[in-house]
Length: 375
Ligand code: PMV
Ligand code: MG
Image 1 (spheres, rainbow, N blue to C red):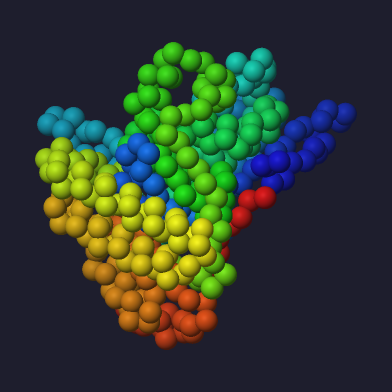
Image 2: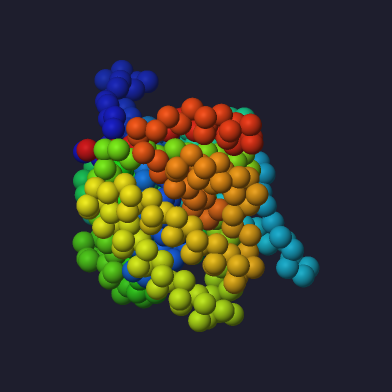
């Protein structure tokens, strides 16, 4: 049900059937609730966008392979810790593919499946060949697409909540510090209100329970709710042209959490209240309440940036927001900030031509993206 295409084709040897399965998973954008959502139970709003990672798995005879045009270990980042070079795997999608394979095979084994050899090929719209990386969350989408493809290949018949849980574990084992809201958007599609599960609980539960037990359990505090936007809501996306590292920005904010305890606690409480109002705006189908919530959340994130001393809203992101603001849009950076994209919520009845024109003049590229629904 969750795999878009699946077919049986004739293999190279006559009479032998080779199984080929293809699965795709969408990228995402955070709309509101960033940073707070990393904490257990705090809400955020995320949307799935119509840019995909596609994974194809084909049965192989002698050896397996993992092929990807976009993701290769041909450039790696490291930092120095004294005499050591320390490599950061968290921004390299290849490690998410490996983690997704390992976890899905662990689950397949527990389901009594015999593991096989296969060629796994990955293709991503999210990382274009000319190196443009829009920040639509390729690590989450590649994890979900790999789990979905192997789910089909091994005929595991995972439900959406099970796909989410397995992909979340695989992602967490590489990145360690995210909210996993991007995984939820990639599995469920559309607009969602997401509340993060308790990661400390999962670390303990992982030692206590088998994967198949974990996938059937309720995870404490996890909540995924599908939202319907009002019909007059229009989402615009602008790209700053510079990439940002989510994991490194989240690490920096985590430092501030320990040092500025009170401010941070207040930020969490305010963010929760604001996002609850925003969600209520969706339920009430009120563009006005939603726009108010976006602006309020932007102010809270500016406060977080201030007391933590981390530059989240870069100059181009600020410009993007100010231009959108002057045309009656409610705008903010999306996700961790530091570059990547900004989002605008604006009344569909308004002409956006002059806004987009000013963006272009300010070197902000409007992205022609649409929200992707999964049925
Ligand atoms: O920049 P993005 O799209 O990867 O979003 C990061 C959002 C954070 O809340 C800052 C981190 C997270 O994992 O939720
Ligand atoms: Mg980002």
